[in-house]
Image 1 (cartoon, one colour):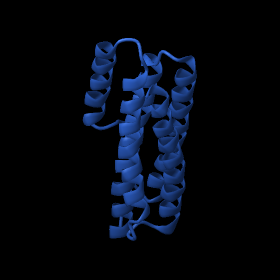
Image 2 (spheres, one colour):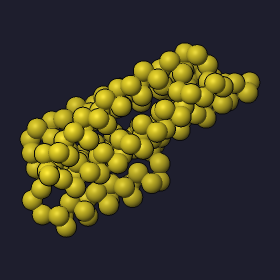
Image 3 (cartoon, helix red, strand yellow):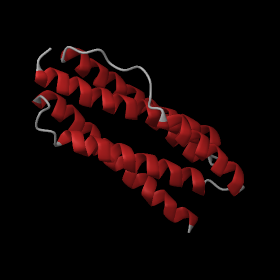
Image 4 (tube, one colour):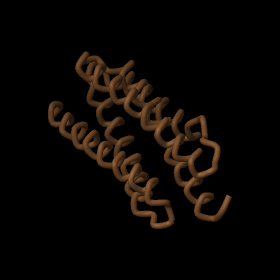
Amino acid sequence: MNQEQYRAVHVLNGLIETTIDSVQGYEQAAQLALNPRFKDMFEARAMARRELTGELETQVRASGGRPLSAGSVIGPIHRAFLSLRDRISGQTDRPVIEEVERGEAFILGQFDKAAHDESLPEVARHLVARAGDHIRGDHDEITGLKAEFH
């Protein structure tokens, strides 16, 4: 594997790790949400992120690497915090929405950084940029949901 392939595999595997965390976070949010509309939205987002993980895995293989199959260490910590925070807050989806928004802001930053990484092959940057656009839309929608709780 040459230096460019190694770099692509490293960056893409980092995005896979973050995207798996996102899937798990959305699944947890769907379980915790009280409003059926939010439950459905979070389940749909988890499915979309699983699909994105598959696309990233395909790109890692195309770059000569082996895709990661697990999320990060911090992901379970974030989900545990989300669960604890929900129990403390009572009967509102506000803390769930706030935690989802934090997660979206993090993953968006990771994808934006990778989309501007000139060392990535063009096809990988295109995939990352396209995914980042979708994530930005998801983030903006979640941010808009917070207004329902003010």
